Length: 429
Image 1 (cartoon, rainbow, N blue to C red):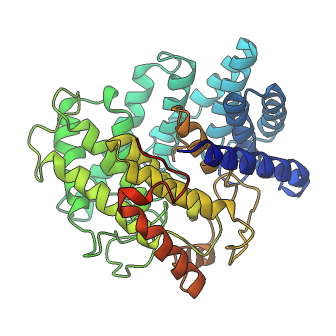
Image 2 (cartoon, rainbow, N blue to C red; image 1 turned 135 degrees about the horizontal axis):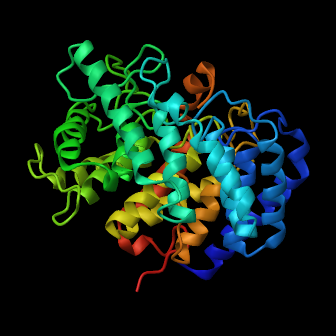
């Protein structure tokens, strides 16, 4: 990648950060969530402080997080849209500042939520945004950033057991011929946000805490089941029984599915703890499913509702970064660059204004641009991984107009290596 393209990315990131600072007063101070609220912006500032070595961003992140911690309602349990997110971020930020007592207090408050998560008689879902795997994410997050024993293995295993038993109970109750099944708001969602793909992805993230029978008899067959219900286009339905091949976004459709099958491919390699000893389709098929989903995103992933992670172009761009990390194929990095270029033209392509334009998951495209910038430097990070019905209906519709068609035609020439130096600043040795 040529230096001028790296400079272009860095310039775009700095410009967007300046705009964010100027408009922070417009954000909803009562929304403390990671997904749409101040904790998400705080997390962004912390990530930027690490990537750009800017101490003032870390100070701003801590200040915003402390305000969020003072407003927790002990209502929701997940990382993205509940108390677990601000608590996990608070523990991390305090630890970074050397305030270990305050960090431990956040951890203890997070652990106190465990009984609610384990209660299978409650109406708590299992999906990432609001449910048990969202809480699991917070636990794994702390173990990753604060040390492997920050959250003891027994706690993680209890949460995993609850998620698995919940899925087994529903599958048996509904007579589904699959080991695990999950429901949210009366539908069997399949995607990354509310669906089985996101849940299974989180289970694979916690594979070291699971037994071989759990992995091979419950998780693997459910992954194979999901693999078998894609559309002929290689996109996936938003939910079981929905025959509309329309949504192509992280929360519903191929972009969220990529994360699962990329992870399943990695974990199915011989020598892995999670090696699927009796693969139904063969582990290479997991890679092929991920790659086909990537092609769907490339052809249909420029969306009408902004640049968000959840249902926008920035979230779809992560598809290509994941595939590049998985395969090392420059085609995927090139595609990520092209989607980044689209995001950098953010004043020209916005057809619908997001409900929360300053939120981490609904609009702030700095995350994807910074992620790509640091990937170029060999230090890519992941944000692992939602809004009103009207937003979802609008956001998944691919743009159909002459300008976008021309842009797509221009970017499709990337399939031949000699064109890489003309597109997205690539040079190949």
